[in-house]
Length: 370
View (spheres, rainbow, N blue to C red):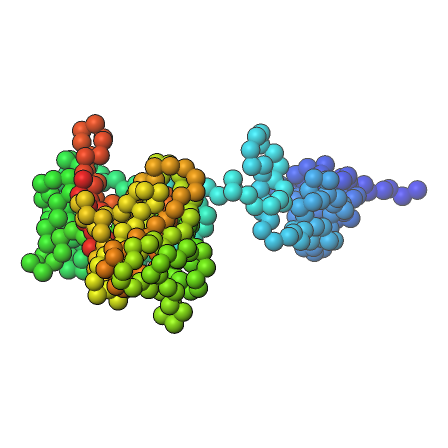
């Protein structure tokens, strides 16, 4: 038998660095190498094949293997390849993006594309902006926050200025003062008008008259003759819808209503067509007054007065004419006063008690200070 030449052989991972001229054959890849003393040189081509690769169960959820190519598996939108959001370190996986994946940025970091959301926003501003296109900042939906705080207290710590840069409102945080039209307020509220035509202070009451209860008088507008007891001399005017009286009688025009002792009522009566005489109006013996102690009503006008009932239950609303009363009455009304009007101004003493209230009604010609 002839001689047989054998060369070094084995699997790829076991192939050592071959000596110069030494041959080595990889039994798993079928590749032949020759050593040059420093490395192994592939004989007969540059294409390298290798033992088939399989992915571990963990890597199979991330990587896709196709023949000699390794790629990433298709993933859903907003999915990141990352480690766990908390806890111990672990191999990265594809998972949904969470807020923990967003780093916390310093105030000085560059931010862009910010829009409205349901989270608290902070505005940090200092100094003055310059440049033709950077003179003003516009906040479309306003700036909403519980407080504004200056970097340090001063007599002009916070200001609201007009377009020309002139302060129209000034907050002195040292003395806790507010100035309107002045940067040096000398009182807790200091208002300085810009001209002699300015109104310095104006308040408006949203309820200049006391709130009233329901109407207690039936047919007070005399749309018919019902509900009233007509004494001698009184007649119902079906054309003008009023109660007419002729001279020579003092019999009353009456109607029963229900009142409560100690309750205050607003009473209203209109006198029309009067040429002489007067009438009085009482509820259960309690009269309304024109002025002072004068209870006779003798002008063609609408009287609005108040009285306090002295009994509880059904009582007579009585309109009594003088014998010479020649005229008509209309629009009789009685309503409980259920509250008070809104004052335009209130003054408190050092104990917090009210010592001054100002109320008024232009339509009633009333001004109350007390």
